[in-house]
Amino acid sequence: MLGAPGHNGHDAAERAQEQTAAAAAARPSSPRGLVLASAGLLHRGDVDGARRAADEVLSTADPRGDAADRLAHHFARVLARRVNEDRAAAGDVVAAAPAPAGGAPPPAPRGAPTATAYLAYNQIAPFLRFAHLTANQAILDAAASGGARRLHIVDLDAAHGVQWPPLLQAIADSADPAVGPPEVRITGAGPDRDVLLRTGDRLRAFAGSLNLPFRFHPLLLPCTAQLAADPATGLELHPDETLAVNCVLFLHRLRGEGEVATFLQWVKSMNPAVVTIAEKEASSSIGSDDCPPDDLPRRVAAAMGYYSAMFDALEATVPPGSADRFLVESEVLGREIDAALALEPGRVGEHTWGFEAWASAARAAGLSPRPLSAFAVSQARLLLRLHYPSEGYVAEEARGACFLGWQTRPLMSVSSWQ
Image (cartoon, rainbow, N blue to C red; front, top):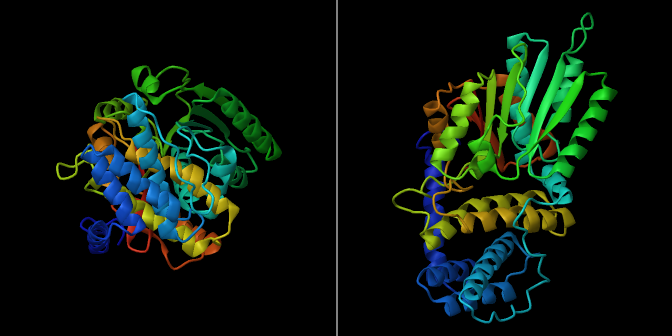
């Protein structure tokens, strides 16, 4: 079972990844081995050697090749950029990069992916849809049990709003004709006001087509630290509403355990009917005493283990010449890899915590588990069968949460709390 404590399949997968990393390091001529060698050299202060190893990967590993080449190319690109930044900070002249194999993708952006890349990711891979579908069902279950005629959703990462049309449709379809549908209000948070306004316009138009009473309030958050410092800013709460707080791929952006604790305590103080948490399933070793955040070689090896499963999944389910796949790997996964290797001291990060750590933080803040319904889990499995037909993707329930994985490797978890 993917999410079982001490899951033998997961442990075996991690052991296999460690053995693969060790074997690759022993064969530094392989793209993966060169990436690990570059990380080791950079960690030891050999900037020139690190750049040579990264440049060799960039000149030989094709970002349009097989999954192994694509994975190595993206890691090498991030390491090469890190070398350049270190050199520039020291006042050194930065040499031009070698001609890339197969035509390099554009540099991975430091900010959010473009709308085109985000929507492509939503189409070709199940991770976002799995998180949205499962979280939505938890919200619907809470709304149904609460019996209120008004539902207020605080969405901490509204982005382009793709999570909410299915939920609005489900609410409209299940409404009692005698009394009509309940009112839905979404407070959508994000760093870009224009994106939030466009998202609100689209959702209002969609709700209008369903004759569903709907309001959208944008909550501009230039940075997540602002929310932790003054979380009540911009929120309007009413006692006659069922309150849902949606944290899909949000908590890892908070800077440190203290900020996570402050945020979750604020969430608890609002007495929500449901809190949905969806996050990547990081390697349990990252951030531990055995693998501190400043140990770049081990962090690179652990992140490569995680993303090798992601790239293998795309290779098995998406044609190699797919423009959407190339875009997603360049903008979405490339940005995530960049974040994984540029972890700031004290920051939680995208690859430091797994489900147990998030669950522990939620309990410490006074939240209680709200187990997902059997229907939520069956919906997740149906999503995979209908839209991502492959024997590799697996959705399983464990410890009250739902896990999505590739073969034996859990990659994402969704849980709900109250």
